[in-house]
Image (cartoon, rainbow, N blue to C red):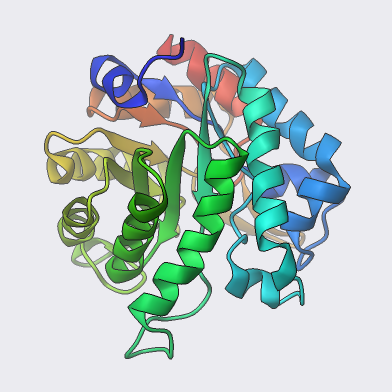
Length: 294
Ligand SMILES: [Zn+2]
């Protein structure tokens, strides 16, 4: 019988997986193409990425469903696939995670702003998130990950949606950037306020992923702020593979597996309970991180 994720987080570090999008691009996904489509048409490739992370030592496998809300799929004219592709995304992750692993049902931003900046009401967003999350739960998710959030109000609606359709643990991660006033989301919210909003909405695990222009030193500093803001809740951090660098071929993240392994130890020492990777991380990075943390 698989242990309870929340109690495992309280007794030690759990390694979650790394980037999916860049791994699918290596397998032929083109920029702008709908990655959700691969859960059906290139299921073997999605499954192979999940399995590579599982073999690297990741016990938490994240579904390929970042752009899986109806609003995001409708941009590709594919809104009728919300239930089908989210169920398939969860089933693929479930198969790779194995009996002792957990599946994070992944929910990304819905792609617009809530009122008053945008036209979407909280009730509308609750329905959008609930539809996707319901399908992820049906497909076998063990927890819901509301990720890469900038607006605490959107994150809070994501938590409410997850709690309304399941009894699963809910995780919220924000993308922070560094400003003169410290770490803030793109919407300008400081770490303490962002995390407090997620906890108030009922999130069980809170933290950060991705980030704009953050170095591995920045992630170590962010880890301390997150831990302080999270209080008694477990904290999660999924850094990019170092700071982004501009090249003629585009932005690259080029921290080595050894550098990421050293960074993972600093996150652990800061009290982070779930450690994984975001942009630019690969199964090789996660294997080095899992090895260092073991
Ligand atoms: Zn990222």
